[in-house]
Image: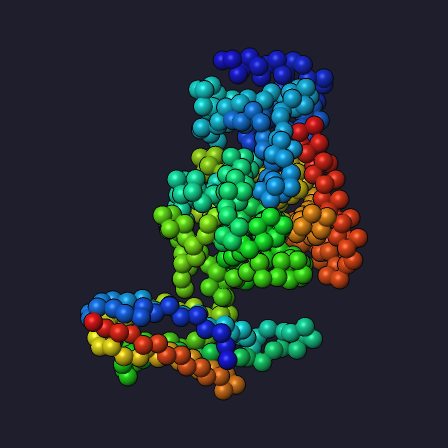
Length: 411
Length: 106
């Protein structure tokens, strides 16, 4: 009942309720959920954000934390600005969703009613996908693919490793959160080893042969980390088929690779609440209408961010933020009973391959044949033959991007 | 010579079922795909794979244009005697490659 009363206070303090008493519930307080709640509130709607954690720990730039280039504090964000805007923020987990009665049950037992529900649950790591790699294994061989304690665990393991040790990384097949993220991480771990533990090696095992910004990464690796970073793609036996926790080894079809530090990024699916809502299909991800981000499986439920099947759009914080704003606009239009205009969405991903050395990929997307498709000729990647000043400028843009997007999402 | 990865146990007990895994780096060009100049790239695939053990064929596979690049095969055999396991790939444009591994059966 406490929650319902707080929801009422939020409603009364709203400046002008253009949509009457329409109630929007947003589940998940990451880049997608926080951005969407704020955009919905700007439309004058009554918004409740459900997020179990009082503090959000951002994944973008967390690879720099792992490499000791950035303090963890700069990754943390609170929800004060959302509350100040009149959004009701409930720090509980959503445990049940009745999509017929349009009700969300919270871990505290209370129930929220909604007219429209937005799910932005991010990813769940699949601890059933890679034999031997379960939650207990992640405390020995961290994934660090959800920022927080895992990020700090991988950082501390790298710090504790003796010079001359081998670091092993295992990278999954598509789709997964942040397509260029593993390669940025490999770059920055290599930078840490080169500068602090130069007799060490980094072995990067990949379940695929092609990846985002590949030519830029490979050119940078050849220039900056020759002999230190060894990349093994699928076609050279790089696909992990399991792990041996006791031996701290990644198992492949052609041999086991032991490491002093082992970072396993396992396969993923949409966050658990997407399954509970019935919004995820057999792939583990959520099919959506690319115009409104409404689920193709359950009405009046919208899915944004990493959990959604967004076609050519990658699973990134920038994409989640862009989708959040399109989704909020669509919900405001739908509540008025009007037709949703066709959106254009933008994504830019910056990656650091060393301090002061940034590379980027950008894309523009529009709905086509039920998915979001790349608009040919729009976007692109950083040039291959750019001078150091260009790379330094892009590293600076990456910092600016982080400030901008976290300000938009968290205030 | 294409790069080949092979995982065959060097030693096994008689009658043991052992896994054979192999991957060969090959583009498996389908013959249906246009290249950068718009012209269809000629077909270039591996057409046949055979595995003999101690002189006898124990496994073979016919490949088609639908088989992905860098074909990966995984199969098992039952050990009888110590002897060579010979893997052979043959394909378009006279492609042929043979790899041999000895198994010691005790």
